[in-house]
Length: 118
Image 1: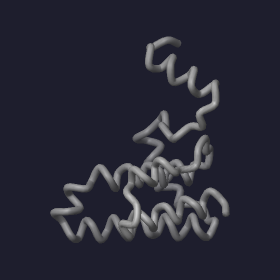
Image 2 (image 1 turned 90 degrees about the vertical axis):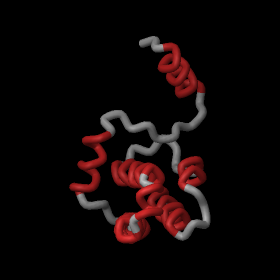
Image 3 (image 1 turned 45 degrees about the horizontal axis):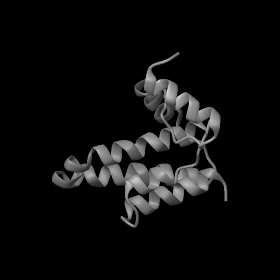
């Protein structure tokens, strides 16, 4: 199974409330450079951040579910997300904080960021 197919399954699991967004993030592919997966990651982050609005506005909830469903369908079929979606997330997150594998290089980078050492 490709990373795109895997992420599509994670998204569907979140929408259908089989797993939480937090669980999806914990199981997200590590060290990805695929801009489609980066955008999908941030769509999931926004999904969770909008929880209060989703609970109070049924129309918003349905629209956001359809949006994530579209992302999942495109990823599952191996297609790229529309460029405007990828671009919109790049504008908000110039330094994407995707999960990283826990190799020594990434541990040292994290420690340097924590200590504010360049």
